[in-house]
Image 1: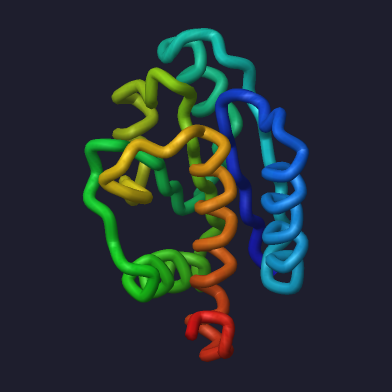
Image 2: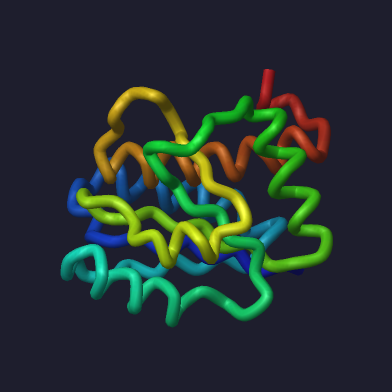
Length: 145
C-alpha cells in the first residue's frame, strides 16, 4: 500500500469542511496510507522550508499552483495513479500567498484546481475529492459517472 501525504499551510477551521475532507481521506484508506500535515502560516519563505522538510523521500510531488494548467479528472487520474505505481504521493497546498519557487521546482506536477479563485478550505476538500475520484476512475468504479 502506497503512502499519500497532503501538506497544507493553514488550519481547516470550519467543522463541515473538516468532516468532508476526513470523509474522502477515510475512503482513500482502502488504497493509501494517508497522512495530512498542517503547517503554520509564517510567510512564503519560512513555509517553503517547512514544506520541503516534510516531503517524503522519493515521493511524486504535486503542488497546487494558481498559475499552473488545469486538467480533467481523467487526466489527473492517469497522471497520479501512474505515478503511484512506483512512488508514494505527496500533494502540497500553500497558504494565501501561494508557494515559493523552491517548492514549485521540487514538484513533479504543478496543478491548478480551477481558473477561479478558491479558498484554502475549498481547495483542500476539492483536492481530497479529486484524489478519491482518480482512484475510482482507475478502478473503473461508478463513482465517476
